[in-house]
Amino acid sequence: MIDKIEEFFLKILEKIHLKKLADWYRKHKEGMRYLIFGALTTLVNIVAYSVLYYILHINNAISNVLAWVIGATFAYITNKYYVFNSKVNTKKELFKEIAYFYGCRVLTLIIDEGIMIFTVDKLGWNAFLMKILANIIVIILNFIFSKILIFKKK
Image (cartoon, rainbow, N blue to C red; front, side, top):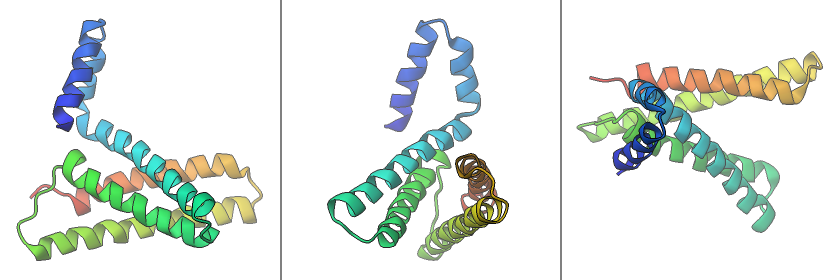
């Protein structure tokens, strides 16, 4: 289904004389899908947090953790099926894949926190700019972990 939607939009690009862009997208499809689903994961996280905190009035920290779990689960599913097309043959392989995914995500969450604490709290640098930098680093690390460790081609 995602392939058909993607191809529909790529055909539109070709019709409006952006064939080079469509070709570039096709050449870098995995990375582009990772960015698209990463943006959607961010949206899922924000919406989940907003519903939990503002509508259901759940504590801030609990809402944030639950939103992270919901977002990470969305990311796992979309990365597995639509970005890396991962196929596992046994329950053991599936469990390993899930454990690696969440383990790596927790690791990059810790890196994110470390960057923010060091640069903002210790050095007094601009929090917004450091959050952008931390997110860039986390996105790159998550892609690398997903590509070479979690969803590696067998």
